[in-house]
Length: 349
Length: 130
Ligand SMILES: [Zn+2]
Image 1 (cartoon, helix red, strand yellow):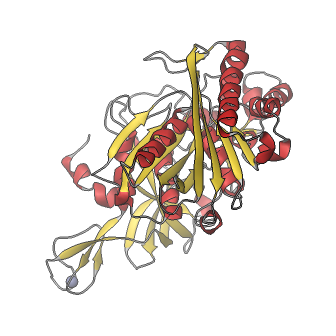
Image 2 (tube, chains in turn yellow, green):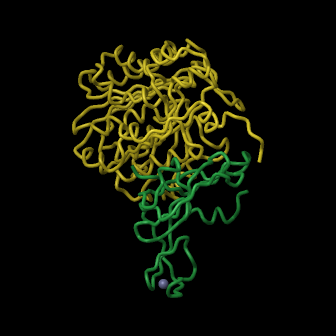
């Protein structure tokens, strides 16, 4: 049996409400909130980045796994917001988690799909017998240009998953990927904010890849939507994942637990992995779960997982996603938000 | 600027590694070459507990230039569960949230990111436990 041995998520404490972003730019808050199905999003503190989020999530994954970090053979971090252009985030994360130095480290990028990429490769190493345990993380502190629709959703957070053959809490039964050249969203080297092709991002990009990947893995597995307790689809906004789920034949009750976007925003590489973590927080032995990510450019990864008897034993060993979403939030006003996000040009010190 | 000292101190800054005197058991943080209690010179590496409580604290309104973006922030002396004391910033905390006796956990955060062409510096801070 191969699968998730330990998992952890991190949700920053700071938030900004969609109302406050809309008011700043003279936009109609109600229509944005209705259009995106989003109330507020997480904001990283001035001392947080993809590296600190990865460490926090990774530490909780280690707590749940209950293994010696030195037994982890690889550490992969998927992110669209690695703090360095040159120097892997993973080098710092392994030091902080006590992993290595005998460890294979790489940073992955694939817009919002980089997290499931990291999970996919970590899983494959264990499956091949190359490593006892492997760590895959999806984390981001993403930025949208001021006033752009992305500013309402781009948020911060992440999740970490330790894959292994022993102590499995959620077995990975199948994997599937679907990728094509679809220029829906991009950022050229040296540009600060990404660009997106407006309405082009929906049908030919998100829905084409998410639905194809989910249909592909369902066919591969011979399972039907009603066989699953939970399904998670990448959450660029509140609407897309619900529409994708409905198109595939999933019901609201199957989608709700992993649908964290209304309170969290789009955590990019951390989005569907954190949705999965939220499902793992409450799943019972035998429950089947489907997760499908999406990364612009574009591609989707799908996993089918089944909870084992060990899952309930580890759920309470670290903070749950929905508890973190509710815990002692600090709401920033727009001015404080742009200062925290480094959107104001300051004098060099 | 990044210094050889920062690199050398990574185990204590990132992982909270202390030095335990093999002779008398005294735990030092940061680690020391010579035991302050018995003068012993043999130390073993130990991971310090991450939970503790605030012994005393102050709010910094006028910080050094490199911490300007984080002001106001709280700096606290924290006593860990094993009695070891350390001084650090308290992350994400409005000043009125930190009191003497407040339970904290030691976490990993970015300490310094300016100037923007330099190496980022990471290390420990405290976080109020909910
Ligand atoms: Zn001694």
